[in-house]
Length: 178
Image: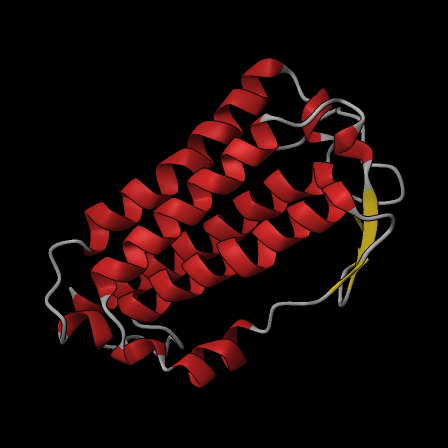
């Protein structure tokens, strides 16, 4: 989505300094992040409970599993990382094992509608929190298991990359049902 940018990078990381992107690029990234819950609702909102549980094309997640994974990662992954990076000095951030959590919480038995609502609420809360950051806040750093050094300026880009990966999985799921 961001393409090749001649932008500054987060200190000690490979990610683009979100807060130093041109306003047009920041606006496009924010819009895409804001739009993801609506996209999911549009793609999955009309599915019945049993169709929402169907896995296709060898994909690991059905629609209901997709939305609950996104909701839990948004809240427990990105949300907690934002909070800890903002309020702690150099926190050690846990990885989010989406496959293990999906199995443990048995996402396939959950409500698609509740998952869509949970994701929308968690995404809105994270975007609101990110919207309040000062320029100095964006440079706050920690270390994430499995990733290495991260900073708050990494989070919007990580969110966007994760959304893109799930858009591709969802498109494969849809194509397999055609």
